Structures are given as C-alpha cells and as structure tokens.
Length: 171
Image (tube, rainbow, N blue to C red):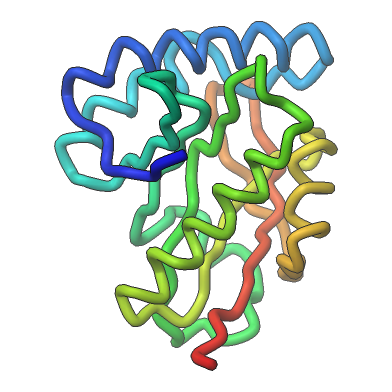
C-alpha cells in the first residue's frame, strides 16, 4: 500500500469510491454526506495538494484531505489553541475494505505527514451520529475536545460535530 498525493486523473475514481461510501452510510442511517459534500470538494483538494490517497494495485482504498484552517476550529476547546495544527477532513474508506484496519492506517499516515511538516496536532471534526468514526478515533488515541461545532449545511439541516485531536510526539 502506498500513500500519495492525489492527481487530477484520480478524481473520478475518488468520487466513485465516495459515492459508494455515501450509499453505505445512508444504508446504515448515517446520512451526513450527499452528492455535493464531499465529492464536489475533491477537485479543489487535488489542486491545493491536500488530498491523499492510499493505493494498492491501482485501486484506491482510502482518501483524506489534510487542511488548514478549519471553520469550526474556534467552536471547541482544544488542549492548546495556539499550537500548529492540521485538520484531517473527508476521510473515507472503500466499502470493500471496511473493518480491515485501513481507517487506522490512514490516521497514522496523517500523523506522519503532520510530523514531517513540524505540526503539533492533528485535529478533525466528526458528526455526533457517526458512531463508527468516533469509535475509530478513540481507538487510535484521539482525544475529544470540549464543545460542539454546529455546522449549518442547509437552512434546516445542522450537523453537530465533535472535535478530536492527537498531540504529535517528537520522540
């Protein structure tokens, strides 16, 4: 498995993978993503060199964006608000590879990338109804920040997002 920056010719593969992820999430009553988010954000992520894909045998197994800053960053109480942080966004795992440790691999890859960039924390937001993702973050030693980011998606649709962070060890 190789982690690499996504290229423009990966766009359709990534979007197809996420459409399947969205169908699977909806089937499991985790209706937080749709045809706009996250699929419409990937082209910009690729242009900004912040979308990473995990690939094996020409198949994309997972992807995430590593961003700075995040609009919800001021809505929760991080351990150290003044530290340098990157935000992991849009983490998705190919539905055929769920339960195989790919999510944990991707979290560790994000931490490695942040370490190389001299970052102090990797942070992320997760919808409070996305219990599988919350379990993944806790299992991988991410700590929940106090507070909730209320992200208004549509006039009558607000996501309640929890912040999680992990301190980068410099050992």
